[in-house]
Length: 472
Image (cartoon, rainbow, N blue to C red; front, side, top):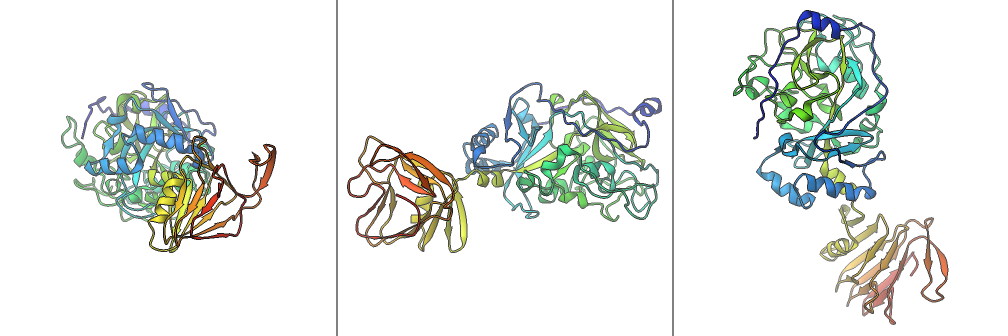
């Protein structure tokens, strides 16, 4: 894996820290301001309505940026190992729900959880730059023995602003009494948000289960001698914690593993971090918090400086918030496919109507092709010999678009059965009538464009055609 050495770690002097730790009242911005990686100002924008069939161009651009010709091609290439941020130092950013992200890591899910299946491609995205700010926590106590230490991420107010969880309001308290309020900027990534169903979680990733600052920094000029809290949601791959700073047995310690949006840790973004981030990717308009609690003081957490230096600050200080998400590329790929093929209650999605008919013809039992969008084809679609295929127009238009040939849109072969249905009869289409050359309006789905005299829409050679819906 590529490694880039960056700015030397520095520790804040108490006087400097005092400037950062301003006040104890909870405060965070409701206004988002993100900037592209300065080495490339282009972005791949998926809009604000989640990932839909309209985002196929954006998805193809992202897959190409990741080095694949298709999802399956990229999946094969990733069998050789993950790609880190240094591979994407000059890449386009990715915009989801108005938030702009850098590409920092591309790997595969190790575990099936939270709607993601092991083996799915996961693109780890880290907010490009941010002016959003928050306290890390409202309470401050240097007591690691507390039920909820003040630098334990799962019970922090900064996590609450990301995912709405309850938080610690008083050092030493036995219960989390703060009421979580999610910053508006992060709503698209939470339950009910437009991108929620397209995100994996840390619980899917083995590398987040075992993160260890000690192991990752072992070959660096300034290695870390003990692990930080909050870095791994499971057992770190090596090293140990200082004194009582192993929080893994405390209530809710690893709850953040199920979050769709989360703060990165020092061992992910730091100068020895797994992601191998560049200085340009790390830089920001202000210092910003990390997930890592400092390893020798229970009311200090780590932050990253404007130009990549890192240090520690009191948890009730106010600093920037640059969260990360795991985009499930498999879920995004499925969302942009336009045609479903169902065989024995198992549904698979395809990009084109031609691919869908090929899959249906390859089935040994009856298959249903359902259209999720209008389609044009330059090739006649065939129901092969002895096959049984149902086409659900679902309110959409299937158009043959090849004026140079005389052909039908669909041909039914010997002993084949073709059934046409339409589950959405409310959608309307305005077309030019082949018979009168006048504009007409069709309610529901339709087949049009065939030019053969003996069946321009559906040509029944010697099979069976059952028409239960739609218009030809």
